[in-house]
Image 1 (cartoon, rainbow, N blue to C red):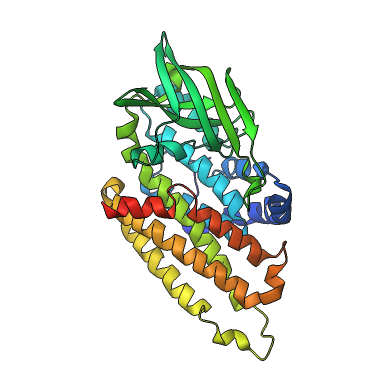
Image 2 (cartoon, rainbow, N blue to C red; image 1 turned 90 degrees about the horizontal axis):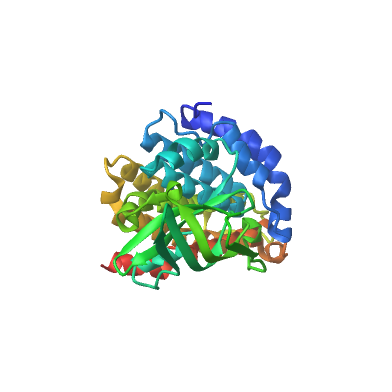
Length: 356
């Protein structure tokens, strides 16, 4: 199935999936760590994540819109979608014939889902921590050992990307199924929010990776090409939450004599900042090479972090005591916004990268 042709068609195809497969489960996702797998797979089944025969820039623009629209309803599930889209990005940019021709079509159709596994490598390339995985060459592939503390959007039949050090100056990037021999997954929960993200600690005990699963034998160079999309999809998480907050504040009841008008955070101001960032993103997407706009992308990512936190705080203030209920939408969005600023690259990580 071909991907839909324009933004209005994207929204038209997406709306019923959100209505039927996401909105009824938002409180269950937030309170009971429910994983909205059916929603994610339906995106593929309806062709919303198909890239076959479509320009890369158009695919990215449409998928960013899907993330934003999803995050308006539930950022936890939009985060899972980000994981999946990051995974798709790795395979779309790989030169490995098996991954690109055998796995990618099924991944795009939602026959299985993908995770990213690159939190630690992104920090490694920024000089924040060492690589947690080590690889050794074997006949027909590699053996990987080590531990990743948190990888999201995982399940028995899912796959995810990893980067492992081969020696002191070289790293490989691989794509691994969750049921690989020697790989142990331990579920992580009890977070402040985003518990329905299917997050696991991953222990690698001499996991054999055949050459068919190698995304790139030069991970450091490969990352330069995929990291713009990696971060742009994250920006859409914040755009979605901020957009939802703006609509929420506009609908806030005018109790206590309309005292909300005296609050320093108002929807018009938030909306203006939101559209400024949207215009910056449009400008970035018009660039021929996204890797040349890396610093601009990082700045927008930092800006949306700050705007989303501000918006979520304003949402709490406008609803007052009603927002302080554990299952309220403003409180959920507040917790989601705190997750966003701690998602790699975190705010301090971004500040370091932008200081260079």
